[in-house]
Image (tube, rainbow, N blue to C red):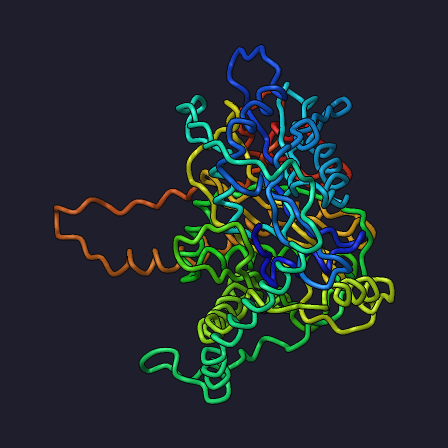
Length: 540
């Protein structure tokens, strides 16, 4: 058996029907040319051959009596692949919007805790004969970085990789379905003692972290002490996103070229993450302004921060959270990114000072039932409708593979994330970089944000606005530089006007019948906007 850390178990204890705590991904797939097989059966065979490569596939929960302590992971010796790998057929015409809506419904249901906490859905019926795959795994056993390691167990770099070595034979646990009460009680006591020991060992680090906050140290030579940035409010302003949520979900996806975002960041002296935050902030600003609900104070975002050591791929949670400004009170996208960059630097300094002191494993003997009760009461009381929000939205940026991946012989065209909204933050905006693209997955409470696809469209608009704004910054500099160059007499060629680069396009990956990985996007037909390419016209 394997103990759950305090942080892992928290995702179990705070889960309610309104706030399922699983994460997932949506992948559009391209099957090999001339494929005639049954892809669903191929997927089951592919997963069956790789079950031993990740313990996430085969471990399940053993719950403690009366929930007096955290559960433990035990091995499931009889994984039912017909349950975990399912087939779904979309009704005609099989558009991307239909796929988004169906994934939103799938993501709203709780997982069966008596089984290993993962599910795969093979989806056919898409336009153009394409397939898709939706995956979900409970957050109790995985975070963003661990998810990347889990993907390596099922994804390959080639459509037909070398065969996987079979697992070693293990002795069975007397064919028992669950552990006995005595074993569970012993595990609870042992785990609690280990957690207290770990907590005591972190006391020196915690003391140093508190000291660094009370008596701040310089960030670097010549830099002043760390301080909360002036443009970050301790509490975010109230918006229509900061309400108690239901279990119904709305989901939307979009894609933006990674190279364009990197280039914009380079020209602005900002990181990739700063520009991503600026794109999300601009989209939210446009959306709230449409509703006449844009707050005067800047909105803030809750940002997950990994606590992992380099190379650590263990399947557990090692993550914390920080808060950054979104500078939504600033209209100019370049100035907004500058404000975000300042806030980001301050947040990184803070996390750097206290990272070693943030516990991911802590004792909770006798507390699980209390945590579950408080989580349920918080949702039912609708306190989130009245309390000031600590942050307005969750935004996460997960680095991913920059080469094409394959699953059961099919090429992955997209890597759209599917994450978790919560009470008080009804929208989660997560982006995964994959194979030269930034794939955005927006999931929200359907009652609070029924038109989440409009926010997704605004991501594309804001990306284009940033690209155009960056060009205007380049033009004066190029003109000034040209004036300073003096040509030698009778030798230098006459200066010619620089050709303007083509207008930046922020394509949307779509399940269009005539395209390969579609790289163009179009807003829903109900919204008046110029066309963004033919590939997306058949997907809405």
